[in-house]
Length: 351
Ligand code: NAD
Ligand code: ZN
Ligand code: ZN
Image (cartoon, rainbow, N blue to C red; front, top):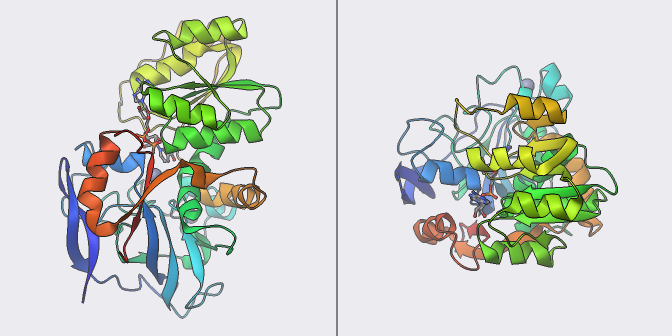
């Protein structure tokens, strides 16, 4: 049997196609019928032709909510019919790093391509009718009825990533925070900073509409061609923290320069430049703290699920569109083009 999925065919070409019906990875895996799948900024790296592998013809996507339709005999915590959130990060669940929840440091995955769905042909993606989940006891969580599919999709990666970046940059009550890049990850970083007690959050993006969206969520839009200058003026020397959610050289550099002396920078945007030059004298004189990494979603989920259930985080607020999976080619074009009104797009494989 074949299932509907979105498949990477080459740069600017992700389109619906039929792929082989996923089968249980092993006795510890499950099959999930996907009820909602997100398109992430990370998928845009693939769409733009700067993917994480040179593979062609694989199913993309790594953000999903769904219902379990098949369980391997060694799965302990899940049963057929249960509603689950699929963590974007994938770990073995058996090494010391996984025991600590730090999946991104899993000792038994060879690299990022093993650690996430839909980045290569290695692990089939989530923008499909069905998804095979390995080590289900570790890589899935039950989703309470009070949390919608849309919120669950955002929690499965973007909200977790934003919280992770904010947490690692040690945002503390009263801090001033600059968020650079206001896609779904940046908008969740705005919410995270406020939930952590930031006194002011400055929102930087090239697109006015995205700055206004951040303002609706409680940030101060930085409407200037010289955001560094303006934020330094507004804060008397620089914000305490900067969260970078783009991944470009210019924005990582901006994050480092927009913080005050002793400031903290959290980079969650995915950089694909092996030759980025850090201004070492500036970093040293400032006593800059610089964190960067890939989110271990499993580690952040208990906290952000509780904050969402309590109404302190609102992941649904970043979702702008719910489209049929069959409209996937158009959805990618609109998300990549940062079309007016488009933020997070959630795909529905049943439509
Ligand atoms: P997105 O593409 O929707 O958002 C990026 C935003 O950056 C856009 O609003 C864009 O207008 C803005 N931008 C681009 N260039 C800019 C510039 N020079 N100055 C200011 N703003 C600029 O993507 P997203 O889904 O929000 O993801 C953001 C980043 O986070 C991506 O790089 C993605 O790969 C990464 N990501 C990382 C992890 C992780 O674990 N570290 C997880 C998920 C996503
Ligand atoms: Zn992602
Ligand atoms: Zn592991």
